Amino acid sequence: MIRQPLRIGTRASKLALAQAGQMRARIAAGLGDDAAAVLVHITTAGDRVQDRRLMDIGGKGLFTKEIEDALLDGRIDCAIHSLKDMPAEGPEGLVIAAIPEREDPRDAFLSARFDALDALPRGGRLGTASLRRQAQALRARPDLEVLPLRGNVDTRLAKLERGEFDAIILAAAGLNRLGLGDAPRAWLDPMATPPAPGQGALAIQTRVEDRDADWLRALRHRDTQLAVAAERGALTALEASCKTAVGAYAVVEAGEVRLMVEALTPDGAQTFRETGAVSADGSDAETRARALGLALGHAVRERGGAALLIGS
Picture 1 (cartoon, helix red, strand yellow):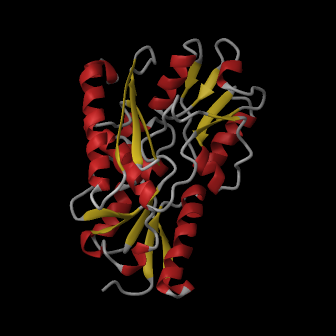
Picture 2 (spheres, one colour; picture 1 turned 135 degrees about the vertical axis):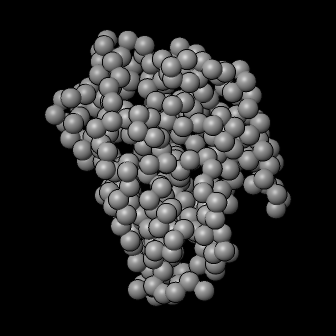
């Protein structure tokens, strides 16, 4: 039995606290007492190191490891993560126990002067920390100068305001959760420019023995869980990290899970895509969705091969 109050681990950034605060309120409501759940702030390696790209210092797991360590050793009872920050495979003993309804999964284009990527001047400076976004931008505009952009959302917006970049690309979900949903000039079509697997979704992570706790049930959103199961299946198949440019986007509609998987060479010169669908009906739909992602991811990997990796 988990003791009260339930301790929720989260990064301490403004965005992480905003989204974890929303989940804390829902968890407390499920427990029947607003004081029954509290946030525990944990600083991760990804938060501490802001002057280098993630792929140069160990990848996306740098945003989760310290939190997962706290969960494994009992200092917290669950954790809230941005699902796109989670590696394809988590540590033994932990599980993603619930995924709430997804926010906007799209990437957002922000600029002080330009309305869209194709409106940027030749040689324009585009800021992003994501290899995927870099490759997708260079596919459309190989003339652009893509520059690294780390830091929290406020820091990135301040750099744009100071004129360090002509434009930047951020996740629409994070902007929405911070009340900045009107900041973008445009949003990227997720079918034309697939986001990171799981983008826009939050994950509630627990120890394996706590995965069926009553308070988790109300947090699960079936269509979101089906969509991200497919996307993360592709992530697993492609062994995607910060050194591979991979996008995946799934929707649940008309009784099907429909998935598109994309991998690009780092310079955006080559794109490898696969699409497919499976039925969304039945108790085993999540298993089928993941299997679809695995199959499409393997097909993309076979076609792209070593060209998809940095340094190849």
